[in-house]
Length: 340
Image (cartoon, rainbow, N blue to C red; front, side, top):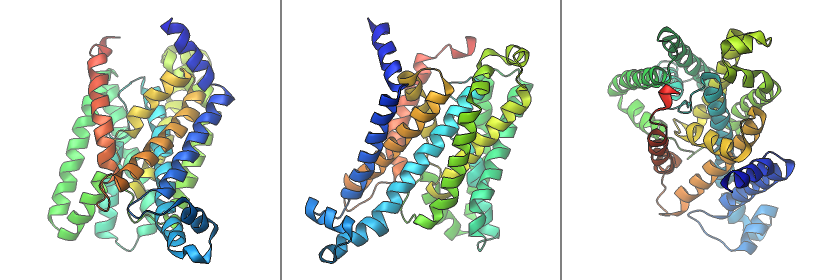
């Protein structure tokens, strides 16, 4: 009975109807994010402000200059980190691979801090520098995983070790400058306060490009799950395919980190939810993960802005309360995952 129910759920969310439902939920969460916040107003004021009526000027300013950039940023960050998580878990065949656990986020964060310390006027280069840091961290972890036979435990432990090392370097840098320390504390938690629409254009373009490339190459990416030998015999250039997937995963995560900070657990939690909903098809996972990731981060940010209003809880803290228990559950459930 359970298998039949799962099959029906998978068929539904792998279909256009399931995609339409998730898209509706994403749009609904965006609308809720625009409506709710520390400043409250009626539905009438909300719609008048949305329409730009003069009698609702305050609502108009709050909606378009404060809430809209945050809601869009939350959706974009959720999509970017979810796509990165799907690619990392697929290419490494590891259920626990995600941008924050294996050091991708930390690598991007380190390079961001270095840029802000040594070249503070080069802020427009932040997305590019974030990508370089994220990709460098990914290559290090992949190389270490290869040297140790590619076991899942070694891969995760290497990622944790690299993250600790990078965090140590960042902590040392921040000790030298109080202003950098203050900026990094907010950056490390992950949040969307003060995000401007202009800052979202380049990250959104990068994430959209990664999604398109990943979607088009998904059939070949799926073959990597069969093992290198079988994938190679089916015509896949394994090393090139793996590197291209890692580049895409790094770029997508770095684009999100560049404006949302080190937002954790999205790339871990959402791919698992996507697989449960839409099955093992990488294309279906990319679509479902993108929409679910956007919904989750938008809702988490809205909750953080309203639950203790006017005090704001950064979205990274909300995600930690969601993601950490999920990670514990995954570890307990998959305690023998290294022997599979």
